[in-house]
Image (cartoon, rainbow, N blue to C red; front, side):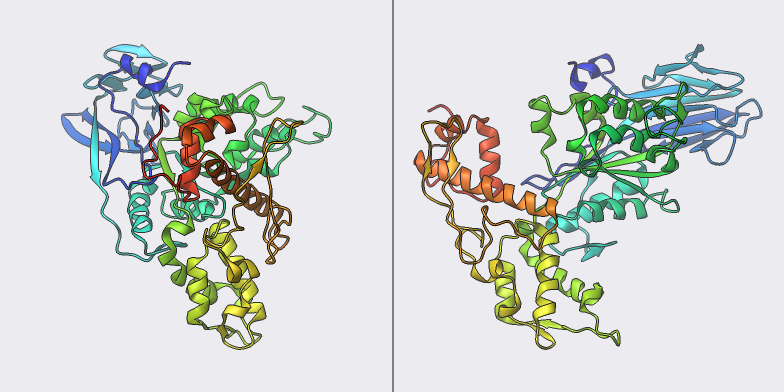
Length: 502
C-alpha cells in the first residue's frame, strides 16, 4: 500500500495536513495547512485565505468563496484537501472549470497555478502556518472541565481547529470524555446551528452498520419495507460523530473512505450517489496505529481521518482536576438535587478527597461520575465522607487502588496462553467479579484494563524486568509492550530498562 509520504512525492510543494498529537510530551506548536486564492475580476484583486478541508466556490451565498460574476454557476466547483494535496472538482458548471487554461473535471492543484471560472481568474497558493499553542487560562471549555496544563493546551487547540471544518479523530481510554470533546468542537464550529448526528459502531450489529450510515432503498434487503435516510444524509451541513471507530468492519471501511474523499454516499440498493457536506469527527479507545500495523484497519482511511488527531489524557494523569470535576458534578447533576431543587451534598471531607485523588480511575471520568453518584446516595448529610465512597476507592493498594498484581503467572502444560493467577480482594473489584454497577461496555473495558495491567506486571516479574524477554513471551511487539507499561505506570524494576537487543 502506498503511503501518504510516498504519494506526496508527486506534489512536493504541497504541505502535509494539520496534525495535532498529545501522547506523553505536549506540543508547543501545531502546524496548520492553509491555502490562498487570489481572485481577479473586472480589475479588482482580492485575497482569500482558507484553512478548512473543503472550499466551495460559486455565485450563491452559501459558498465559502462567493464570486459576483454572472458567468459563474451557483455551485461551480469545490476544492478539497486530502493526503495528496488540494483536489479541485467541477460541480457540473455551465461554463466549466479551467486549470492553467485546460478544462478539467477534477485535478490536483500546484502552487501558483491559475484557476479560471467564468470571467474570474484565481491564483492558488499554499503555506504551512506554525501556530503557537499557548495554554488557555480557562478552567473549562464548553462542557470540558479541567485546569491541568494538558487540558488547557487542549482548549487552545480546539479553539484553533473547531471553526475550520477539518476532520478530527480523538483517541483515548474509555471514559476520558471523548464525546464531550466532540460536542464542544461542534458547538464552536460553523455548523453549530445544525444538530449533530451520533453513530456508535460498537452498538449496532455489523450487518446493519452500512444501512445506518448510508441509508437504504425500499426492497434492497429483507425487512427494508421503506426507503430510509442514513446518518450521512441526516448530518448534511452538520457534524457526524462516529464513535468506537475501531469496531468498524474492514469490508465497510472503503465505503467510509469514499464518503470522505468524494463527499458523496450511495444508499444500499440505490443506483445513484448523493452529494453530502458533512464534517466527520471520529473517536476510539483503540490505538489505531497499532490496528493499522496489525492489518485490522485500513491505512488510507486512518490517514484520511487523522487530519487533526487529539489524544485525551486519562484521569490519572490529571488528578489535580478531580476536585474541580467533583464540584461540577455536585452542582450540575440531577442526582444531587433534593425535591425543593437544592443540593443534597455541598462538600467533600478531606479524607474522602484524599482517597478520590489517589485512586487511579481505570474507568476515568465515567467511573468518577458513578462513584460520586453512589456517594451522594449514601451520604447522611451535606458532606461526602470516606465511608460513602465505593469499596474499591476506599480500600486501594500501592498500584493506585487497582487489585494487587500477582507475582506469578503459571503456564499450564496443556495451554498455549499464560493465565494470571488472581486472588479476589475483599472489595470485590477483580477480574473474577465484574463491576456490576457499571454498564456492560464500561465493565468490560475495566476488566480488560485490569487484565492488561496484571499480565504485563506479572510477565516483567517473571523475567526479572527484562522487557524484551517479557514481550517475546507475550508474543507482542516490544514497543507495544512498553506502551502498555506506560499506560499503567508499570516499572520494569531495573535500573537500566533499555534492553532492546538483549
